[in-house]
Amino acid sequence: MISNLVIQKFGGTSLANIERIQAVANLIEQSVLNGKEVVAVVSAMAGETQRLIDLAKEVQSEPDPREYDALISSGEQVSVALLAMALKEKNFLSKSYTAFQLGLKTDQIHGKARINSIDTSVLHEDLKKGIVPVITGFQGINESGDITTLGRGGSDTSAVALAVALEANECQIFTDVDGVYTTDPRVYEKAKKIDKLSFEEMLELSSLGAKVLQIRAVEFASKFNMPIRVLSSFNKGEGTLIDKEDENLEDALISGVTHTKNDSKLIIRQVPDVPGIAAKILSPISNVGIEVDVIVQNVAEDKTTDFTFTVKDEDADKAAKILNDLSGELGGGSVELAKEISKVSVVGVGMKSHAGVATKMFSALADKNINIDMISTSEIKISVVVSRESAEDAVKALHDVFELG
Ligand code: ADP
Ligand code: ASP
Ligand code: MG
Image (cartoon, rainbow, N blue to C red):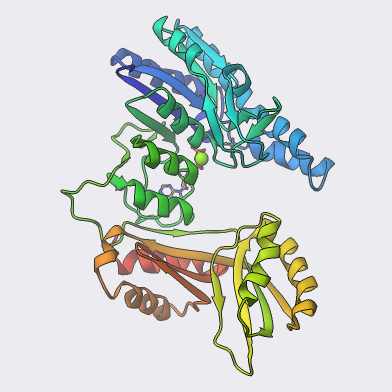
């Protein structure tokens, strides 16, 4: 086991230009001077991945998956080389690596690949020699030797996977805010930084729209008990520590409010209210790899029912087409698609043992005249689907009513 090893991941805005890359090299230098061994993981420079995605779509409206990953993973290769150069310029030993050079293996699923294994032998050798390895986030290679990518925000997952493989002390995620907040600080200025969160809470926050950490990174960290610390690469501070639940701490009733910005709602009207109808509607949707989120089936009137569910925007047209084809077959009615919706959620481990959170939430939204379309709950979260234009007001109202500021 390597002692004192930390993984330090730097996101796009932390590497937006040469000055920022030099600032990141300074941060790494500080850690090394403080006696840490560092392995750096980097994203593409700010805006670069999106630029590449847009280019791909100009050439092919549904880009070839293999070539798409080859293209959109390339931003990370630029960043690793520049950061390794910046470190060498400061007289550090450093070496950049792509996923291919490292043998970071994933499954075959382009655009959403999962990491299977990482060959750490080169990294151990480097660390022994005092070299700071700088590794591309977001990318892997599959069994056929093709480049894969891990989904938007996937560098977080690369960093956690490397931390686990190298048995690091901590996985540090440097970004453009100084930790995880009670809600997106860019949406509500009253948002407050949270010092400590359990994996369970962070999992919910990430899955419900807090893009500060990719959900898979949190899943990975939770599975292997790897502490994550979210920090700013711009300001000094302790950041937010995400770790296993601390039994001595009283659980926060509500730890945060999140919202999504890319959900769509589909309704299929007047389908026969018979056993098996939900499966008949949803199987052709999931068979093409579309993830369904909130589902509501109304109480039947006249032996027919309306069936409503949400999907990601990018899947909405495809799902609507499937429903249109299906509706005739099932003897159902019209299909409606509403694109501009958002899911707003409150999350907190403490709500397990408190009644009344939902009532308080719904009253606060009613007071602001915000209409609730759908509701879904779990032990530690309550989500509502609202129109996208009211989402930010909903976030603010809930942040206020639960006194998170
Ligand atoms: P990076 O490029 O460093 O990976 P991201 O843009 O992926 O950074 O994530 C950081 C952003 O996440 C912040 O700028 C912030 O707007 C957003 N964010 C959303 N919800 C939260 C939250 N609860 N706490 C902190 N940041 C949040
Ligand atoms: N560069 C990739 C993206 O923009 C990965 C990441 O930033 O984590 O999604
Ligand atoms: Mg990110």
